[in-house]
Length: 482
Length: 96
Ligand SMILES: [Zn+2]
Image 1 (cartoon, rainbow over the protein chains, first blue to last red):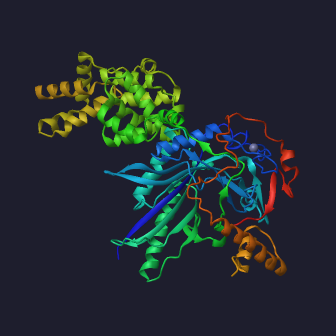
Image 2: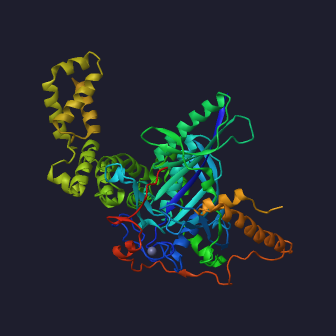
Image 3: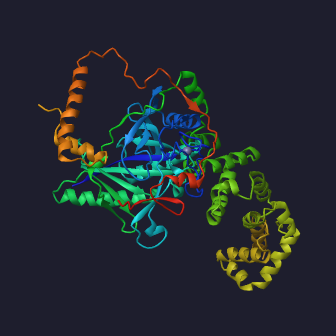
């Protein structure tokens, strides 16, 4: 039987603020344990949380970027559960009047475009961080350790409808969402620091069936790759269960990276009775129209819109436009180059090929890239005018990344100017033909590959500096003549 | 008929991490039952034209600026901890 895979995602993103959501402790990763904590975020008795305005506005911006309907009267609620990383034994979250509802995120993959509907976007506080000493400090300890630096950091939760069909859509959704959050400066989305986390729910149903199958939630997904691997595993597992005539049990499973499989969680379902009730310590937030419009006006051009603009305005392929807009900083770099150079396509070629290659190989981010747009364009021009050949230009580029020197300086220091002097080229051609009498004979017998061979030899002799078009032209003339 | 039974009391007690004796369970069945019966009584009022109350006063939009204030010193943070290890709170082992 053919099955359809149905996936929904919950995303947690830590917001880019200076301080925590309800107190003035710094929102900072990597500080020494338990040094960013105060009575409020430690949940000591008698304290009063106060909402961080920047955090609230950042969440609002995200909800707007995800085309949500905004609840202009929004409240906070207590989500009650016991866990050692939660100092108050409840998490301040939103349940009844979420900040944003009924939004969507448009994704593009292959040639397809699709809207993934967002159920809600809401604001809540982070829990602390649990450390299990058997992995951190060695030995099988019978205790866990808690660091409350992260407790109370503003967290945005984005919940989709079960709208994704298959892994391609899931991957496109995660990438697009991450990109939107980066573009809007809502989050730094550093997955390795836990700033961006995903939980997935997945069910299978026979193709053509309306009713959804039993749903399994998957947690402990520490990277996008883990999300995809866990879903792939779960697709296989559920398919086998269904095909053997059994039913999939509704449960929460944990992804085990070392075992490459999902495993049933040991906690009882009973634990998921959160008994939400309105948070009496926080006043409701009322977002007046003017405030809402002001926030809307701060939204930058979003990745997909930018991608489409790159195609329409600069004549780039959709693929190239996608590569460039994947990273806001890279797209900014490209556009800066375009203001300095007449051909967006030429610039795009350099950025998507050579700049990206160096970024990948050196594991650099574009903001730290030693070659500025101005420097790159200068090099592109040298290659264009024929002052340096393309192979030499590529070499010069690598050296620019190594040394931060400008292209003309490198060209001059190393004597890399392209040889475009007719007399000089003719004499080099003469030499090469003399050194390779066989090639000449082959050519006369009609072997056209001999020409390519000779061009290669000339390039070698000139260390790639000979103007290739002129070499071709002059060499042909010479060979024809005799 | 009781509005609340012993099973519910046990469930609520578990969620609140409370250990109750059999006598206490019986007591709370009747006490919580009385409270819920009273709430049922309140529900008889027509509230269809009343806005749900989210907060005790009419105050809204109390915010703070995103400006840091000093955190506690590590010693102070850990001062009330029932158990600690190095710079951390120490808790019973948590495993999923
Ligand atoms: Zn604090």
